[in-house]
Length: 432
Image (cartoon, rainbow, N blue to C red; front, side, top):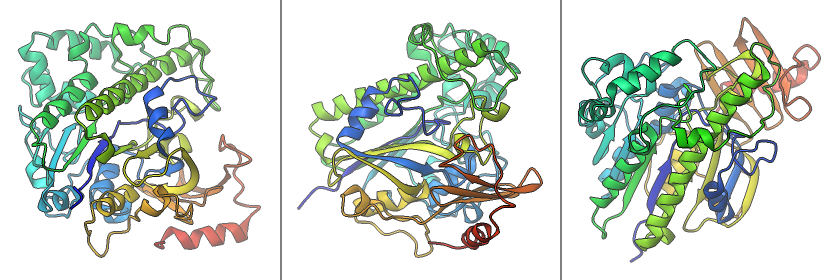
């Protein structure tokens, strides 16, 4: 009997689609992600169903589109009576582990000092749920409310962290280094938690591990070691931006890249660990993100917007029954990972789940997957067919962009293309 595959899911926060080494226009270094892509599949057109933390993660947990996930904004918690992919894995006998920033109870600061708060209800066997960067500071400056701030309090590092974060507050281009030691930097602490969770897993049982990094989400806090790694690197300027100086933009992009490279470094650590344990060949490894980051494009920062910098995410998959070195432009939604996880483990999801398994694409049987993908937040909705993107109710109007001829999304073609608009409108409320 073949042992069920393990699943390792690297899930950074706010890692935009083009910030990987295989995109030659961006001088960021992600050698371990590239190595993963060389023995797996790289998806160039992966889109989040909603470009903000809690809704995106709710869509992933449920395999549902934004309008059906039950979490319309960061002001809502994932309904505890809702189905989750994690619960299905645990019921099937998997050890289901998770660590880092889950953001499934974004509206309620209820992590617990041990990070066990709601993980059992979501379906995890064990895990450590910590607050995001600003949530941790807001909730735990005087008394910790999550395990990361508790760790800093216990190690006499909390004031160092608070002083650093308060200096950054309200300053989008604050790029100085934090004085936290390497082991206390949040993403490093999270990654070590994941290794500790794997150490507690019996060798004869399959596991699912999701690592929710807090980076490369702003603020642009990096360690002194990380700061030095891009000190001399020049990055392309943001698209259609003029608010800050070229040097300010470049330093932000240096720090952002250092956070991305640090997460990539941990990917290499995990791959080596699985190799040493004899588990690499039976582990599906997936690298993606909940949404992107504008990084100054259109004079915007963060996410929540329908531009590609905000909705586009990286996606690389490697492991058993996955073809090697495949690169595809097929359209993918983050909710398709939910269906894929279930499919590779031979499990079933709810009949109304709309995520679609990528297994046929991963095996090289086909490149056909979706005709279009959707995303939304608040009042706006978009549909994207791989070239044209129709956005409705964004900034009180509708937009049509041709991403092939206008990747900067600077020219609204709505008025000149009524037939195309009508065709795309039909997909906004459909399921494919």
